[in-house]
Length: 508
Ligand code: UN1
Image (cartoon, rainbow, N blue to C red; front, side):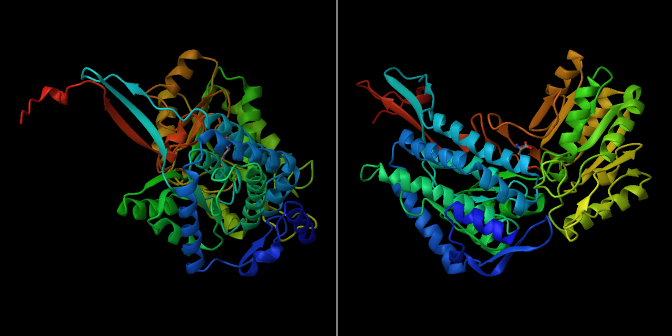
């Protein structure tokens, strides 16, 4: 496997020697073996990278936005060409099944396409002025260096959501990837640099991508903290735990800097009496066990109407029993490993706690996979609870799905909203009143509220993110780009007099 990853990295243009060192070991969740060990950036190196990114921003903001879009178009081309290799690296380093590794690269391609179109649509409003002979308008400008912190579970797609938008908006990007997945970041950076080289070979002078436009910062938590503290970083976009997000938010609040926070999720689905159960079963299974329960959108709480509970839950258990768990590189596998031992232990602790709360635990045991004995593979777990308990308020990044019976839809909606997190949610129903209520002002309080699909697997076209402990940020589609720019309101007086707003008279 080690030789395989070296081959893949070389194919993508990475010279591993540039990164190797003894600070950040990258091990594969597949079998716990070391893939490579990287060197962390020193404090001075982090500073220099941010210096370069800041200098790059000052130049890049002058390049017309559609031309900036051309760089992202080229990057999308590189991703298309190297989708198979990058997808495999994601699988090797993050442990998700190959289908999902490829899906993640597709998500990068999708956001690149979106960003290319966006590069010609960074428009503001023209606003009616109360004064005669005046025009008001708003114009969006680049904001500066965007610092991106990404998590192991979507090691490249989430960076791409941020970076593709940030670049077309005229910013530079410094990226601190999870120390669990530095190689995917190194690989992605190399592909981006290929696009930069092609872009610059077709650029008129002054219209090229400056050195430092994309800086990759390798290191542990302290390097990330340094980036967050640096005054030249104008926006910090962080994905990860609520704990980490709170720390980022505190530092940024102190220096009054913007953040986009995409933190924990504790996503629920309501299955109503009229639900199409065939569809619901498929949606539940993918949302609850996909990526081995390690998506921020993973389905963690299932509220099933009493009238269908005894049909649905045994069906799910039957499916869970037969789920192919194993090496994520193999085509037949649907469930790969957990990221590491700590994730496995957190899962077991949560299951023990659930038992103490009278939960009926199904599955959850470790599964030994031949040839990958050191990987932490588990059978996804279904935990039946008689009501929503305190433990269910916590996000555990593992495939545990709590199931609770409900009789009154309002109760299920209240449970949906009762937890501190507010990322994603869904309802399976064919009753239009229930669906509309769920999506209404008094329905789900989450950033994502779906009908007849699961809570996970959002497309890039919509704004992604959620409320409360999820952090409130929005990334990806819709008008999320506005967070990567600063708005300037311009009032232009083309008359020959100077009337004051609010009718104030001020004669001198
Ligand atoms: C994440 O887990 O951080 O909606 C992102 C989804 C994916 C993105 C998940 N498109 O499940």
